[in-house]
Length: 296
Length: 328
Image (cartoon, rainbow over all chains, first blue to last red; front, side, top):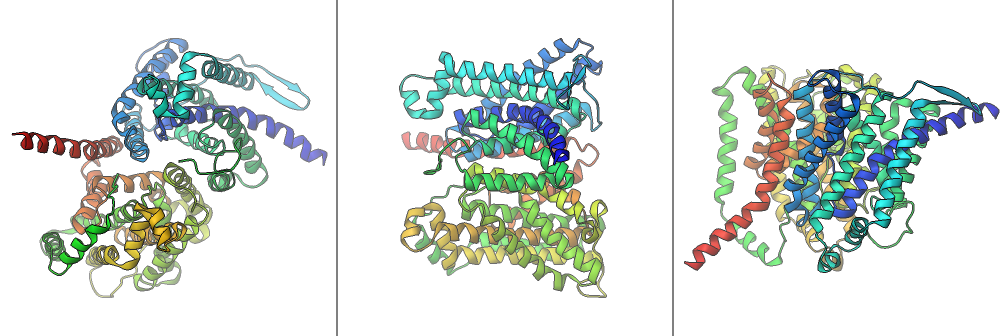
């Protein structure tokens, strides 16, 4: 019994840390979905492209900049990409959300191809400049990386929720996700709010990618694979709820950790498939909503 | 999207036209005849590539059927294709059975797995279903690799049993794929005018009306997924037979997305020429770009976006031109 508890506690802790990152990815997906009803399948590929850009800018492959400057440049690049993406698909958004969703697959393919073209299929490593530090608390092994992830996630998500709850832009965002037609009648500009959510989502994706990469390595597919968990997190949260996405992310992080440790690390994608199907059937509107009526 | 609003009035016109052969039918027949004669003219590697192209065309049809009859988009069809491909490859290598035995099995397993996926996802639609199919596709390579006792794991299996002993294998690979493709196209053409096909279309276009006529939405969804899964399994079976090897790298999420790209590029068409356009796009583009593989995703992405935007703007342009003509 104590053995199980001794394993369980660290597993839940590290699951929560990765869960925070899944939540960052999921929040981006949900921001875009809430405002423009589009599921952004290019999210992972664009974030992966950004991670490679940071690598390219800081390693001397393209430029030899400090880490901070490289991140800043990559964020600017991603904002530009988000802007262009939205410019391309905005005419589709108002016609059919499914068509616009397919179009994001096209953007994802282009981002993936661009990564391959510029950086090749090699595996590189991209570290965070965090102090190497670790301590033991209550049998938990806590590293500087863990605390960095936690701090960044709390600050980012806190800032996001503050903006959405207390600023004019946030009110506009909530109004549009509630009822786009009424919001437009009231004089809100749908496109600028859509653009706001696309840009915020892209930046959240970059933050998530930056923090997840040190735990593995950076290749063309790692970030895209990481975003699958973000998708699962968004689904669990109901795809339309920001707190749901946060909770879903942490839940997925913990569940995945427990599953790979106790059951099998080889069937993690199959496990995610089961979780997604189960979540969609039991909580079609997300774990934080009461079941009732259809969404779309 | 292919939101062809199925109006009841249009069926009469279709039925009337059925009596005689339409120009489109003649085109399909001519194309089929040309493809039957083609091996007399071109050689080795082209025959092989065209066989794979026919197999991909079947996969494109599977995705298009789901769009046309179900109004849903799938990026998980590599799952059903893998079911078909491994039916053929496993029967071939483990039991020495040829396509004659494994193709019906592939079809049956494809339909069953289509239904088995449709049932738990029967209440989902639109993007929710798309996300579920994505999860389905991502689970495929992992499942294949972990059943390596049966499937050969990463290394895959080689399909070598001839359908009819004595005929050159390259010709068999070509003609088997062509025959299955033509059969699928013919079957879909019959479905379009069958009672069941019309019920499916009605359930998609006017769910409430379909309910009133006794076609339940759940039944329509499960049926469409079954048909689509079966066709996708045929695609996988022919990919295995015509392409001669089956390995997990051929059934990733990207393969599913490519099938969707092919479907969009063929404007979700269910006719032989349209299917061939989609299949050729998936097979021949990588062939031409084999020297610079990284361009393939870029090109596919651009083609996908281009066709979607074309589908969006073309009707508008036409309307504008028509307006201008009307004004003069």
